[in-house]
Image 1 (cartoon, rainbow, N blue to C red):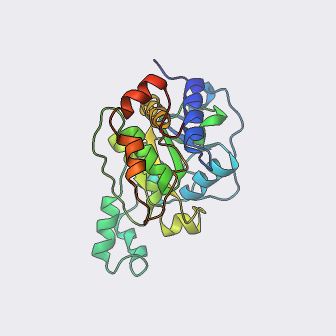
Image 2 (tube, rainbow, N blue to C red):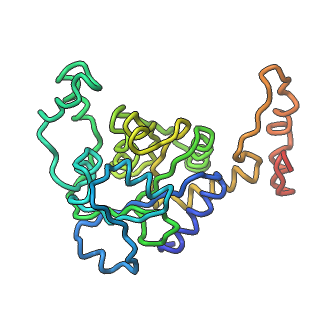
Amino acid sequence: MKASIESMANLTAELESLLRLRSFPVGLRRLTDQSELDELDYDAWKTFEHKPTGCQFITMARTIGWSFAITEEMIRGCGFAWAMGLGDEPDPETAGNVVGTWFESMEDAKKWRAGLPRVSGKIETLLMGPVSAKAFLPEVIWVYGSPSQMILLINAIQWSGYERLEFSTTGESSCMDAPHQCYATGKPQLSLPCYGERWFGGAKEEELSMALPSSQMEKIVAGLKALHSTGYRYPIPATSSETNVEPSLAKMYGPGKREAREKTGKSFWD
């Protein structure tokens, strides 16, 4: 089924509800031509007199609910922008500004710069906003949540068509880890918000982020629903480390439990 703005908003709303996310899932879409904006039935793009960073844009989108049509002139010239295709990549020698801050030597700084994920091709505009705003059809959906929410999201991704998921990190400039890597590989990407994203962008102590290809949303939501029906839900219940877990394991994995769930439609909690 071909996705529409409406169907993607509905799928994302289900994901948001099943995981009980505390901030809006945010969509991203790259426009190679600024004129493509004219084709969208939306005119509430937020603008500023100053230039926010990439991590500030994502925080405003996911917490306040603003939508942005970001051009090179609107965003601070950070790695988030040029690695997304907004503007030209600076000379490698400019990596020297993080020597003594994040890295011991220029050699280390250049290795960091070289390892940053990049999205191929130049663009004129990056659309960013809550999927629920229905401003555009996203290519990537960026969500923030707790480690517990993220492991359930990973479980949902792996529910059918299992594959081992591997994630990497650049360390500093983590706002490029999730969306840029997702664009580059076409696979979900988990990220640990960096010092700068927490300081300037306001990412919370307990938050992680993950970028999801919108083309996989139907499969991911189906996985979340399947987990929910078997009893694997958020919030995750806990028991003490001294408790005998045999009764709980028998509830979940004992003989006939899967058959009983399939027959009755009830989980081990119901």
